[in-house]
Length: 136
Image (cartoon, rainbow, N blue to C red; front, side, top):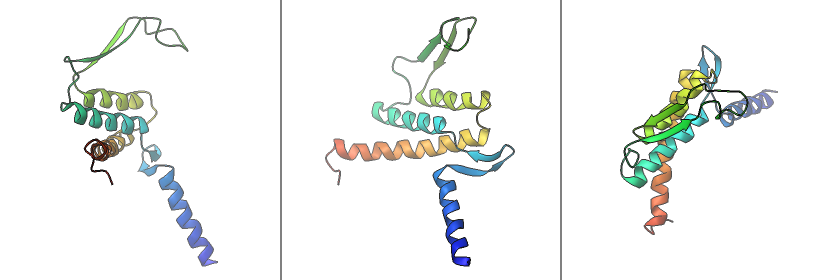
């Protein structure tokens, strides 16, 4: 009996890790924001490839035209222009959008960014070994 319970408890822990369930927060069980993770890892890779965290030409920009951008509703009612000085600014804004949308609490955004920084740096280090011929 104890052995079955032990296996079940271990499986439950593994399932929580696989499902990315984090610590409890004021919103219940926390789930890391994968948008924050992907965005930050991409920012790390782009900064490593280009040798600079800044967008070429000074600013990265996205324009959502008035009454034409959203497919499910009208709006925005005026043009919305988003600008970022660095890849990290753009990545941060992607994660913050999940906070504004009520999808994730702050802890999910932050832990996603931390993981993304690690993933991006590790991915770039691994990719470099293929470029310089030292891959195993």
